[in-house]
Length: 527
Image (cartoon, rainbow, N blue to C red):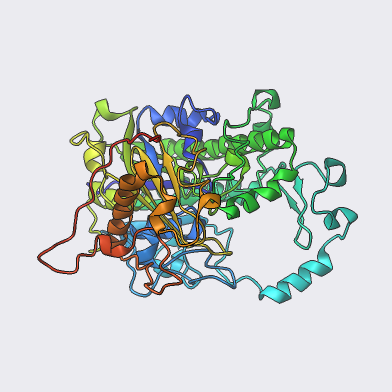
């Protein structure tokens, strides 16, 4: 049946903020009410922890290796300006089915094409798609505008040398981590335009419609309106259990990334968490305005409604903030809540623990709205999990891809129920036993570099009792790479540095075939 569709996507919201019982659960009264008639996917992940590749994956149903978007498409050093030529967007099937497509908010998928170029009606676009100023011209302009103070010359300024929440970065523009704004990132304006469209256009609509509303919060800087900040008491805010992780067993880049946040006092970190949670509450309020508009227009009962985010936020985990290369759960885990009018009553209000991905959204919407999807999409339709006809997992493993932020750095990650392997092409790998170490404190492949001898083999850094696990996880990783056209291998001696190479799944003969990955069970972490 051709149902209307509302997609509400926040920016940089952790999945934990919508899940009851979690330390980081935000106050979300509208979502809490909405969840009672929707299905929450409690283990939903983005395929990449950056805005542009994750959003391209949402709209194409493909992994970054397939659509070609790897980092910020608007920067001068962007790897690409948008999806590679010939990439199909799944919403084209909705156009063919007669849907009106309406867009308000953040796009961040292509620098070459805006939603209007692809058939959407644009309401309000807070970020136009254009290249940033040329690098050195921009830096010269910033240098003229910057207030040069003594504190900027001190790489480790004390609280008395900077404003509250300020992170001093010598030679870079001023950055204040949190604050207050009555209309942060124009999110209120984005939603206002969408509400007005629902009120004015939907009651008499003769065709089904899809409305996408993309806010920029709770992205840093964390600047919610004051009335939402007042809902949280700083004395009720605690730091995460893994906040003080020294990360000595993890890549050096992780520690260097965290160094900038070490300027903040413990109270400032807690204030940042307070502001982040308040920002999530503000986004909940905006979502509620859209629900109210649908009710008032009489279209609520005929509308498929999704609440999503593009990626997460460390929010103090391991002493880190925002998102980036550190490959921790908090950067990849996102909220995914779906209300489908045709969903059986006994499925509503549940939380499903199947492993799902942003690439599943397009196939799901095409299935439940009876639109024709593109021939190639890598995601799965979640309809069988929405209607209760399937209770198994959607996939055995999750596959994540990152070619880094604007500083680059290539990672591939494979995650099962028990294990997480991070293949770092710029440093040592990481392995976490998720059953015994859900906070990812202990890298089981770390801490051995000092013990190496000249001439050791590549497996000598892997504890003997974990070698089968590592091999099987690498097999899973390369199987996913093969499946999703991810050609990250180079057989040259200086670049072929992964512990196991791709030939463990790319069989040399047809008769030999491709060895299927073996499902992994938990293995003791001690010999």
